[in-house]
Length: 449
Image (cartoon, rainbow, N blue to C red; front, top):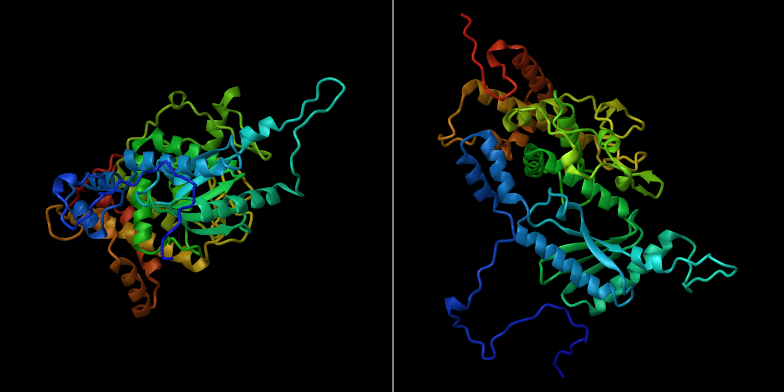
């Protein structure tokens, strides 16, 4: 009575304990470990304020938040441990990471998305048609592929819950558009989502990786916009009417496609560069694009991150969301095919809107904050604040929670909406020769009397 019983399903993880444990442990026995969590908001804010320029701020934020090599390896190891468990039912399966864990846009502490790949098993089950006889392996059939996916994940979920070492809090979310099993992996500390029959997500991860690798400014800008959005509660870890990180990433890519000259190519252009080896059709959707980075010409655009950050807020602060959609396949604005407040076309399943969940109020909040942020950066151009001053500046100033509160406060105090006042200010600043900015992000000062 009172003693625990071990289930004989062993992980490849070992626990190392002292035989005679005591409270006194020498410092020499401690093994140094790399930090697998992002810095605190206070620490990050201090690092940004100590930077030398806005470009330096964006690169500093990227360096502090991006996945480390150790963290990435730990994610692959965790996938292999889950593969060990799934292999009890499907001996030739593979569990692969996808999403933010591998697309180069993952932040320390992000969830681990895993894909249960059963393709190799399907190849063995293919029937033989040569000769006069039909020969095939006996398998169990179900009415649809979705039901098969639900049954597979249901059984794997039960196995993880009952036998999986370190797998806790298992939830089987089988009625979602993409069925999944969610759980926490104690040894690695990751919150995990396991799916199957979601191969398009793997291609999306590959596409984002290519975009992130084409130009060093892409990831720095995406990380900064995501951080800004989270600071103002535009995004949330809880599903709802908020903009997602994936939608924000698509918006940044679209914006960079719209620059002159473009910083990123359109998906259709990447498709034209593809050869026979790159051809990929998944569930009737054309997911073809070139995978060889060496065959994609680098951009001739030399704009600074400071200018791009400012122009991003200005571009989407004045974007006609009421009638236009965002489409990275063609890299141009198009009429919305549906009345959703925000329409961002899924790059592969083109009939889908990846931002269908976003409400009008959340979109308006994004627009208001984008206009306010653009105005703040333009004011800094005018006032030339010193990075050595004690006042928050650049990206650090944009992360202050009081920005959103000031917008709300101004709306209550003044008849004219803050968003309209900021829009008018931006238009006057853009038309003023005294506050012009060249393509390299350098400030120019008028010498007119």
